[in-house]
Length: 92
Image 1 (cartoon, rainbow, N blue to C red):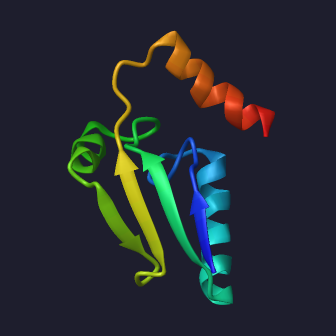
Image 2: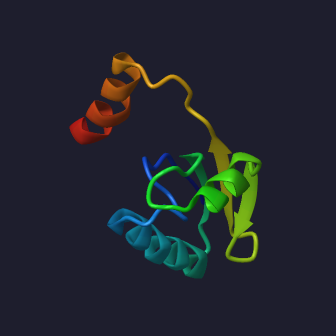
């Protein structure tokens, strides 16, 4: 079964939900699920070197290819984008 996830934060960002996500991914892999994750390019809680590295990474496999991570950038964070980014996940 395929699973699609759209987290606000994702590894290597150092926040608590990233740690929970890692545990979930390992459980998904163990149970045979194949998650595809669509995440923003990391910006919070990382060094400038890591930030530069991830600017160039648009796709990566994790856990021996069981998890597909697609990265994208969100430019020009306007008030509308901020509202959509934080309000919609809070509503769910």
